[in-house]
Image (cartoon, rainbow, N blue to C red; front, side, top):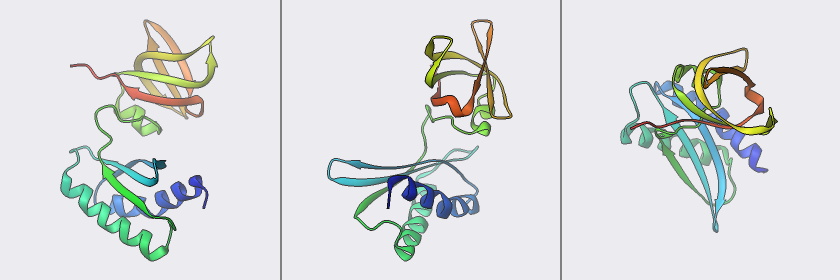
Amino acid sequence: MAKISVVESIIEISEPVIKDEGLELVDVEYKKLGKTWTLRIFIDSDRGITVDDCQKVSRQIEDIIEIDDLIASPFVLEVSSPGLDRPLKKEKDFLRFKNKAIEVKTFSPMENRKNFKGTIQDCKNQILFLNEEGASIEISLDKISQAKPIIEF
């Protein structure tokens, strides 16, 4: 199986399990780290994530992966919170951080640059509206390679 197929399969089987627990699937990664394949599933909720949440989801998903034989080679499964600097990918992710400062990197240059920092004004119809030092910038979500909140202490 190609990496993308594994990720898509894991999203398909894990999303219903995670929703049944009252949680949200944030992201799935399947990468080879050294000699070992690692499957990382990031979950979140408005109330935060506990170790118990991670254990429940991990057990259920591990069972489904084993029963459906989705991953042939040995792997390590990690289920965790995305952390404070969680990746922003979906429209609802950006809306959750509306009026907050974020960093955005685009796949290709826009206005001769690929890095932007600003405050989320809105996100609708797959367009991010960012206020960068008083200037309004519109970035299509499919042009974003990476976006994450700016953590202020």
